[in-house]
Image (tube, rainbow, N blue to C red; front, side, top):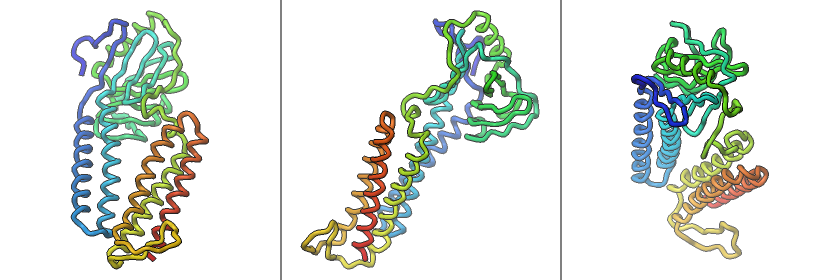
Length: 308
């Protein structure tokens, strides 16, 4: 929180940090909860025989681990949330995303009226709100705030968009906006979000690529399900003929587990490859994902044949 004058850099920028830290504390608690239960579920699965019950432990652990990673990013984004003003514009820093608002586009900064209800569609934790909402007399608004009550909000209004922020000292923030506007713009900025690192990957804006990835994941999970559902009822020795061989051989049934584990390994490698290839050649990424769906389907069919 700010005490006294907000911190300034040698370049003349001023950073305002949002009020309240309960969003960070809650996020940290959720991350810890997700990772602890992930470990417990994996440990539980390892103590069981190969069965659907053990598979359920692993699947739930996978979902919890992914959720923990997402909570960790959101918590990091909250910890790094800040509003930076300079003579060119206002930048809202949130994780790997930076909303750039040219100073000459800011028409007014409006305080939130007391008791005015605000509904935000997006990330909503106590003291942590990121998303979009409609505000009467302002319109569609993008929220990057930590408010606990509507009067803690400031609305930065431009001709095309409005942004809701929460700073400890709204009067100082408004005064700094006016001061920087009077100084004049040195560099003309474009009003747009700027993404970095993983957030900059175009994969997140491609619905078809995401759909293909989800289908591949589901087919891989089905392969595990087919093997784990029948594994306990199978004899210890089986006649193996997958992949297709001219000579059928007898092997321990534990070799069946190589089907889903190999499918899972190929799934990870190809998803990561397609994710990064997508940034420079979308069609190649599509081909990789389609091939991955076909490959996972082959493993699923092979698993069904092997346990039939």
